[in-house]
Length: 399
Image (cartoon, rainbow, N blue to C red; front, side, top):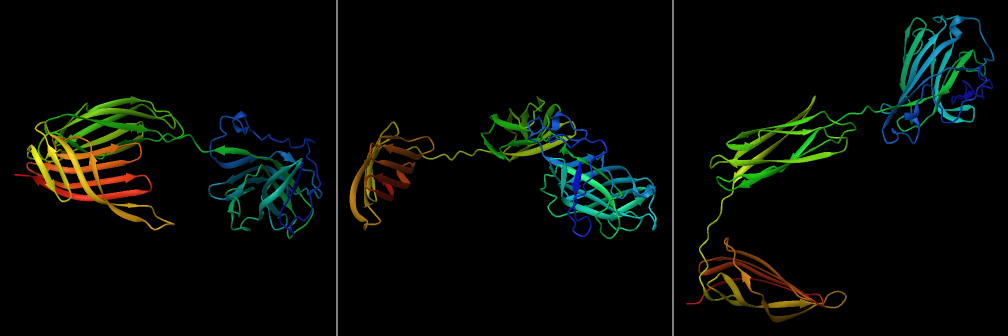
């Protein structure tokens, strides 16, 4: 196996030395890799956070040196994608001195046949204290440094080499090999979601849906949801949802009733092992506005007339309003028209919100009926040829 460094003036040519084992680096293999590292394996969708390698293929040095400090015993390298760093732990045959010092190259790159083409590397002095990026402990050198492009790089091989100081095409020793992906750990997460506010009738129970989800990458332990009510009552006080798979959710429900006239709250606390999540519901009283019952008779007002029957129907509605048709690129035209609306049942609240749809048109009628008066009236029309019309109105019962 070969490797080529990226630093001009340090190692300027391909180091044409084969691995001692005589085995070329095979595409797709990795030191210590298993099936989980394959592109189409179970981990293919997981985030790769680092790449590591225990470099074991030794090159045949062009300038071997008998000094133990100029021989590599082991090289464990790491490329951290999140931090954008490269480095590793390198063990020499002995601690280097000024007389036996050398430049240590730690690099990563791309496999091209049996050559690791360097894309980024780090050059260190093997003499203790010689490089600020490194820490020295006897014959062991540990280094880690930020390099350009390391956050997104998909390097698949690495190398470590000892070369003469100051730049040379010669090598004292070197190790090269492929690297294996390190995946982000599988971590479960817990979230709970429900409506934040709810209006309930006095003395009545209301149903509330609650959804617990797991946006994480592993299944949660068994999920329990505890509910605590203040100025309200809740049933049940605890819900058991079991385990929730990665990316899955479960929906359940509880009932709540307002205890007094003031607003109350329900606090939700979900737990699954060490996971915690919470939510809060504000419960308010649903105040029903009691309006006067509509009085039967004939009504008229600004541009409208109609009748209200004894059984609370608005019938015979007619309205006069301006209708605008056409538009760009032509000039729109406006004319007055007379329109009607279907029979409408007046609800107990007195609020009318009705729609009438024909083959070529759609009309809307809104109004509030209370006693002998009708207020907040609005009629809207949408017809062919881009014709539209809107009219606000009020009306009262004729004597």
